[in-house]
Image (tube, rainbow, N blue to C red; front, side):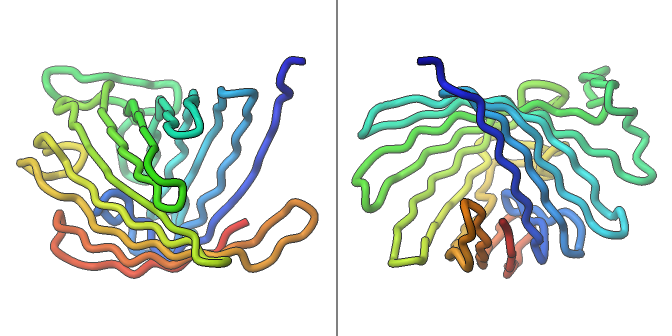
Length: 219
């Protein structure tokens, strides 16, 4: 029997939007997501918005997953799309590209691969992200994470490293660590297949030389 199509919708309200050691805006963000999946293939969209339009992002993605009981993998093509007030980056259909050493248009593509293995109680995930389109530097980012379940709580830790200089995307001129992250989360309420959850993150960013504490509520 052929696998069926599944649709999932979720949204998070986060106190700050911090990604790979960089903060995007200084106000809370609403981050909705829609995912359509069938078998080992999925595609969808994810966004992040502030109430005053300080930050507006609407990304697209498609992903394949596979593996065995002891080792799983995923491969995702991510299309980052920003449309900020005052940014002359073109409309949604203007994909631009690198021209004379500079990125044009509002879309940048990243190819992200993950491998997860190790003990079931303490798995390790290796993540590699490579900007493949509309980035003159084509930076390579590597992350290593693990998580452990403690009753209703899930505790996750991650370290990230930028392996190549990235003056445009990460705004750094040399390879360096991007973040050390601790994430603690738990479900708050379950109702007929819908779940409300909360989490907190403590992040140290060597890129900007400061820490962040983030709280979030999602469903």
